[in-house]
Image (cartoon, rainbow, N blue to C red; front, side, top):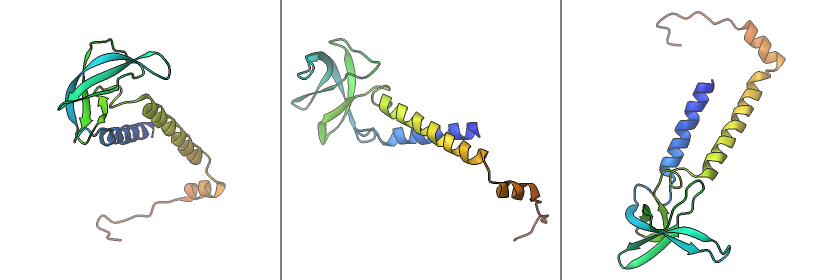
Length: 146
């Protein structure tokens, strides 16, 4: 049961990740970008931004992800949609494909649903237990169509 639930979780989470990325992986365009350090107006701290150009327009997108740090001048790749390049993202496994929020939320959901399933199957009613004990499989012939 544990293997089946774990495999089902991995398949569903993988499909969710594959088809829910924004900007869309299948329709997105890739462009080289350079990391620049920009002072955040709210916190007065320097944050990493990926600077890239599309045509003659220059754009900057957030490159500051949890567990990943960049230095000024680092080269990265961004993915963007032609219709809205302002909503680009740094194309990397951690930050584009996997984010901390999605990973934590999906693991919590898996644990909760697993505990619900275990709770339901571990405490059968006396009637259900009696029915299971009295069950006798009926004999069927090999080519019985019913």
